[in-house]
Image (cartoon, rainbow, N blue to C red; front, top):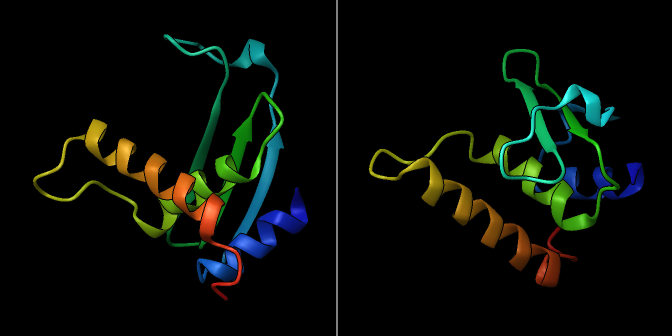
Length: 102
């Protein structure tokens, strides 16, 4: 996973960031309608982030979380749900077509 993370950090031009992966215990998570947790904590001032997860990560999940750094907030006229849907679609498309962008 670390190699895949580094590859996508390069593709998305996040090489100057310190991004780590941290598996968490499901007991640490309050689930709403989800059966798993993957999320990112970002510190833009320090250019550091941690991707927390309680399931095995795949390429699309890593890309999705990295896109939350590249595109940190919804656009002015965009709801959070639309923003999240766009991030999800972008991650799906990059997973299919993104290799070789660097």
